[in-house]
Image (cartoon, rainbow over all chains, first blue to last red; front, top):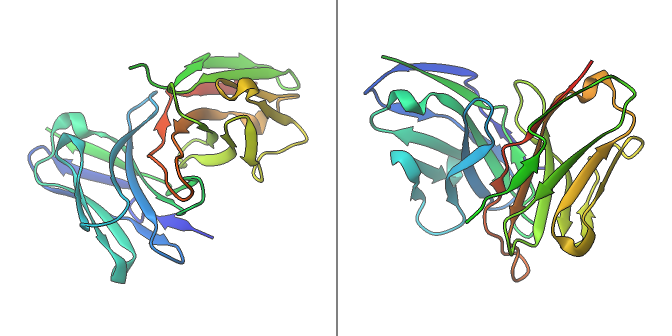
Length: 114
Length: 117
């Protein structure tokens, strides 16, 4: 069975500082990997996805993530955080051929200090 | 292009009462999902449809939950009777599944926040 671990429940960074959110997954083969962001009272918005190919993927809002097979990780990064990035971030893994059934981590709440 | 539309946005009901949620997916998306998100947790899949067929409902509590997707477009999720523990956000998502093994990413609606009192 697939699973996702997001070890940081809360992270606080200063505006303009760099950000890295950690994500580790468990899956028997090469998975589909996603990062979603959720603002209060809103649904999930896709930031970026990895299906295959280049292991460094670019997303919206200046985010990027790197798939590292050897570490079973898919960490999300942003070089300079904006106050509007404050939200909850979810990493998810999808099974290939499994109809894109997503298994989500428990999320990381990001707070941005001005 | 309109995204995934869910209604209502909020619902408060007393325990033991029935409740229903509605979802209209993105036009052309043949795969539809219902997820439940408990407070402080990530979403968990309840049921997945490909067209009008429920292909994965292993996590749906079938004693009180039911879902349908007539005509393979919009869908309803029902709880009868509701329990206090059903309080959560219910998210609908859709994606396009083409050839076997392929998929686009899932797009989510804003969800319905259910409070059972």
